[in-house]
Length: 398
Image (cartoon, rainbow, N blue to C red; front, side):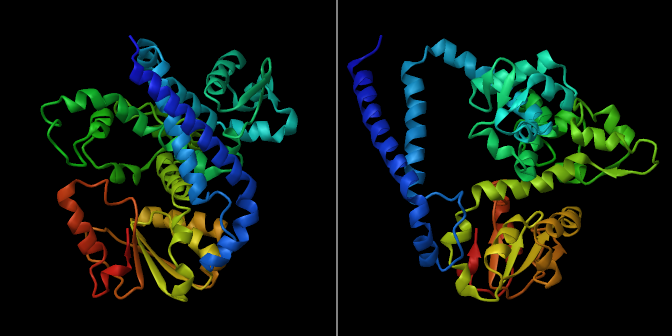
């Protein structure tokens, strides 16, 4: 039975919805006209178009929160619980669409979009089955079906067009991590794992039937036949273009890097472009001149890569495990900013952030997304080793 309090909350949500929508429309109308003045204020080049104003950011957060509260108030509880319990279907459909680059295929068709027959022919997935996957995504407002069996990109799916880092971030969750989630319930209740916070005693090890940490597993070199056979453990292996590329080398008698490793490195670049845009502008980087920025646990150096385009005087040192730095130096940076390599503005140094930092006296030590993934007792060792120097701690950006 609904109460007066529920009705009152609905009216409050209506007011918040109207207010937020007006704010968003207002910001949409002014964001481009105010962009040059904001860039001038920050002392930077033109602001990234994906970075909203503070007002737009807050209005969007409010409207999305209101939407969630409305679902809580008006949805049938049993139906809502069933909907959430099966949401892995939507995730899996997105994994498949991203892996097969459906958004790019549709984009190539121009405004007309692409028929399910075209998508089927170019992906190798049977048309009727692929159509069900696409309609699942359309029902969740990713892609749109403009007429029967004919699909187009919408505002959401358009973000995947010619965006390999974003694709990699989505695909990363579809490989071994997805299989690890399948083992999570039993791992939580397993006598040997339940009370452990060790990174070698998780649902990942349980699912794959191994004891090594994920980083060591990712860095393994294997044969194309291993990729074809899937595994280890319950993990069926990678799929899509990564699978096809690997097994194309099956007669070479050479080992290859795990496809999951390359995806992981590119995914870290993609994630930074999504969640770290504000960091490029909210700190006065331009005031540092030719300073050196040390990215501790920086992956392929995605954040430094973004900075390098905006602040051409800055120098960078990327610290991480050797295999991911090889990908950075040989693949990512040559494609994204070859001039920074040619000018010697970036260095790649193998390093574990549990060991003493080899770079002393740098101007900035940047630690991002490496503190929360470790259990609490380990955090001090990361900050002490990652920035073990006589530097002033006000220069640590975490």
